[in-house]
Image (cartoon, rainbow, N blue to C red; front, top):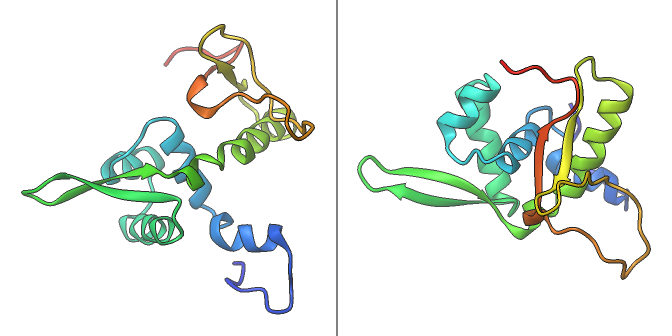
Length: 149
């Protein structure tokens, strides 16, 4: 397991991994991009132990990646919503998804596409100031070769 601090290192990658590099964390964030919001939804989809999920969600809230929003008074229940800081992880996740689809996935890839015209979208390096696609304009759908369950 990665240490949580990197004394003497001034490395943005190491510092980012200290926040989101744990096994479950990016999967929770991924599922939030797919529309999950509630504890039980994350737990059911991921099959993660409840205590581990509680720890990860609390850490994501503490880091400002999620915000907790109450949706029920009795019993008191919360949902977890991505903040702007959390939504900015979409580019990193899209890049990881593309890399995984290309090099390690045994299943047909998913497709990130623009909702308006259904054109595929790729995570790529672009020149500063270049128009980019905003997260709310995107959707993730099964790619070619997926079979319905």
